[in-house]
Image 1: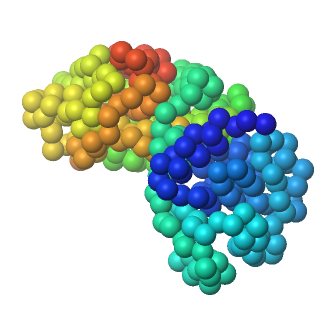
Image 2: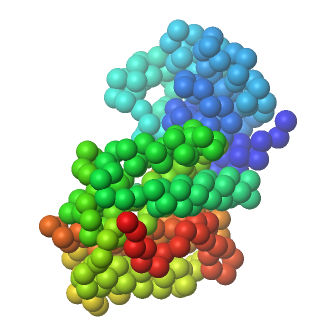
Length: 357
Ligand code: GLY
Ligand code: MN
């Protein structure tokens, strides 16, 4: 059976002069093979695709990864790797240096004497950066579920509710509609806490006349969505309105201008320049967005430091914010896919200033 992802990986290995790659990152393993178990390794050569796992998965793994030869590994998996490499005559083995702990590396070096261990980074992650149509379809569903969750929860928000109970209600809603879990710890940050860019839901009780920042997503069929809206309970002051409108202007501008061919840095500047022009540049201390996919944060970044060229098939967030300690904060976030001539926005929740309560 042909697995296109293995074919692309082999091309990448050949460009890097690597005979074989040992994949220990569980997300990369799932992406390349389809196998979702809690433990397993891939060993890919120019002609072999092996999936090594243990007794628990000897039925599940062949069913999920039909393009792989599934092998039940020895008590020490590296002993099986050693045997397979010897039979295949492999002398240089790439390994994912960002997915190995020092003790494993030491054990491998000892077990694989005579084989050169070559540290590599981002080999599979670079493939994952460009989503195919099937991935984008799942991400669209994950985004829609986040939109539905926002509509559900904004219908319930009122003073007296506890942030953590709101987060729980959102989680139950998402899971009852097919999500495996939230895609990260749900942020419900009300009042002064809304100035915390990552104010994970706490025991705070919602009051009248304050922002509530909701940042959450669904982890659905192996992919993440990530949606932020900031709503208001009660009657806002001019300052609340001011920062909301600035963030909205910055976010809408970026959504209208982001195009393939731009760098992550140029995309970041689309929101940052507007927020800076209004005098709040130093209150926007994070990047404009990040890649999104099987992980909540992946390549590419939309930040001052990113030289990555935005390319069709990349999926990123666009999420400028302004955070005023002691007062409150606003962030507005959507998920988008880069297309041949611009973007397609996957999330569709309303973003005019929403007054509740
Ligand atoms: N929405 C969470 C984050 O982007 O970090
Ligand atoms: Mn995000």
